[in-house]
Image (cartoon, rainbow, N blue to C red; front, side, top):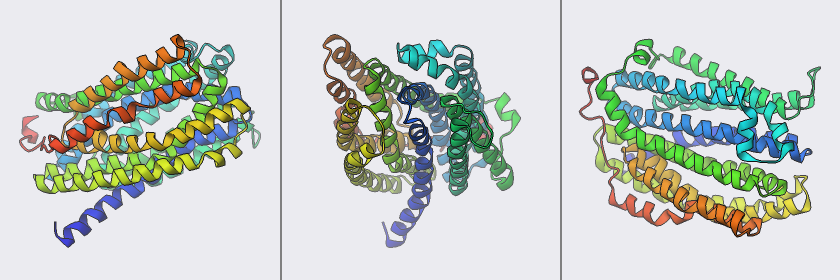
Length: 454
C-alpha cells in the first residue's frame, strides 16, 4: 500500500471512528447519569439497572437489524448503488415494526412480569414497574433512530449522527435532573423521571434523523420499499443477516441471563454490577466505534471489488483493536479507586465494585478484539454464521450454565460467580483469531445484485 493509500485509509477510518466514539461515549453517559442521580437511593438505582436490561435486549434486536442493513449499505455505497440502499432501508424498517410492537406491549401492559424475570425482590420490582411503563415509549423512537442512523452513517453523515446524539444525550441528562428531582415546578418522579427523560430525548433524536434524511437527500425512505420487497433481496438479506441477527439475540439474551443471575445474589451485588456495567460501556466506546467503523471501511472496499485492499485494512484494524483493548482495560482497572470515591454504597457493595473493576482489565481486551472482528470485519464480508455459532456456544454452553451452577448450586461467593460470568470474551479468543487468519470474511456479497433482480 502506497503512502497516499495509507493516508487515505487513516483519514477515512479516523473520520468514522472519532465521531462514533464520541457518539458511543455520549450514549454511555445516559445510564451513568441515571446511576449518579439515583445513587443516594440504592433501591431505585438497582431497580433502574435491572429494568434497563429490557432496553439493552431491545437495542440488541434493533442493532442486529441495523447491522444487517449496514452490511449491505456499506457494500452498495462502495459500489455506488443508492437505489439498493433505499431498498435495504425500507426492508429493515418493515422488519423493525413487529419488534417495536412486542417490546412496547410487554413493558406497557406487563411490567411486573418483566421485572420478575430479573429479580424476586419486591422493593426492586415495585420501583421498576413505573419506570418500564414510561420507558416503553422510548423504545419506539429509539428503534426507528437506530435504523435511520445505520443508513446515515453509511452514506457519509457520521458527523451529523454524532451531533444529533450529543444533543439527545445532553437533553436526556438535563431532563433527568428536572424529572428525577422535580425542578422548575415539575413533580419529583424519582426513577420514573429517568424513564421520562429517556423517552423525551429519544423522540428528539428521531426528529434529528428524519430532518437529516430530508435535508441531504442522498437516500430516502420510500413507502413502496417498506410495503414490497423483491425475493432476491429477501433471500440474500436472510442468508447474511439472519445469522448476525440470531447471534445478537442469543448473545443479548445470554447477557441478560447474567444480569438475572446477579440480580438474585442480593442488592449489593446488583448495585456494584450496575456501576461496573456503566464503566465498561464508557471505556468500550472506542471498541464499539472501531468495530462499526471497520465494518464500513472494509465493506466499502469489498463492495467495490478491491479484496486485497480490504484484506490490508482488516489487518490494520485488527492490530489497532489489540492495542486499544490493552490500554482501555488498564484504564478501567485504574479507575477503581476514583469510582469508589464518588459512589454511596454499602461497604460490601463497594468491595464488590472495586474487585469487579479490576477484572475489567482482561475483559475489555477480549471485548475489543471480538467486537472488532465478529461485529466489524467479519460482518463486513457477510461472514456472520461463524459469529452466531461462536457466541451461542460460548454463552449458552458455558457461561450461563456455569454461572448458574456457581451461584445457585455451589453457592460460591459473589465475586467468584462474577468472575465466571465474565469469561465469555476470553474463552472464545483463540477460535476468533484463528477464523480471522483464514480470511473467509473476504467476500463481495453484492457484486451480482442489480436493482432489476429485486
